[in-house]
Length: 171
Length: 241
Image (cartoon, rainbow over all chains, first blue to last red; front, side, top):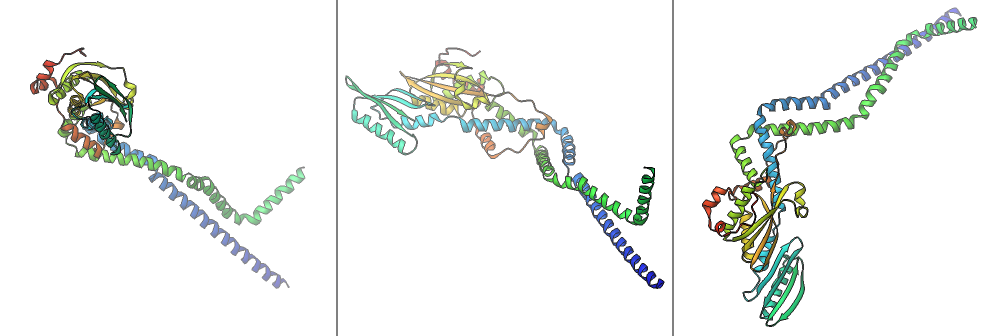
């Protein structure tokens, strides 16, 4: 009986040892994995951190300080050319539009007043010939069709003594 | 109470004796959990934000490297010349002399006769959207002649330093009045950060540089050498000086 009891007891202890060994192994493996992951994460964070990049920036900026004069001039050139480019692209081309309009004026038609600005074109022309004024009006309307002008409106047509006076607005 | 306490101690001691072999595995598992939740999880959760920050810094670093290349490749004489050309087109101060020169040059080259001119540094500046960025001087030039004369004058003016912008043309009674904005902008202070952000000239800036390189020089000395007819015939209403 006692031998049986001892045998049972021995079997029970070895199972306990086996379980303990398994638990130890698993716990150490977990600790190893977690520890290794932490170290790897730390190294990744250090190597690829914003501070690491900032240090590189500082080193490079320091090395450029020897070229202070030329870098200042290049910066000013960049800035100035950017501004000039903006001015050139934004400046008004009223003279081109005005040129296209006045070249359509027949010799017999006299320009009394011509104005072009942000509000568009307004003009007053006169002629002895109504036909010439009509031809001129048609030419201006053709400019509207060809998109040089986006709209033409007749402001007035009057007759005074021997002269016809035409008032136009265009945008 | 003492008896209970002593009993509890004995129980705890007994439990410890029975399970002391599990102490180290349990401790290592606890440490693993702590490491996982205190160090690894926060690092993983904050990774996107940190990556964004690093990306921003890397972009800055790339710009500095680009600046380094530009600086090391630059020809100091050429940069000096280009800067001088650009500053003629957009002066850093109220360049009255150059403006007067440009008006006379444009008049001389276009054959226009200037009847008078005047300038105003304050009025009508709101009409130009660029004035928020640049300082301007508004000049009014009256030319004897038709709109065509004014158009030719502006064509030449647009090819003369400093940069200008004709914002209005008015012809009446044989005279053409042209309102012109002249730009200027002072040099901004250059910081270390600015110097590390220099870059190559963009295609639009290159085109602008090519254009202004061909412009007429408007220095007064050269103007009178080119043509004196227009300036002699012009009646100057008011002087900016």
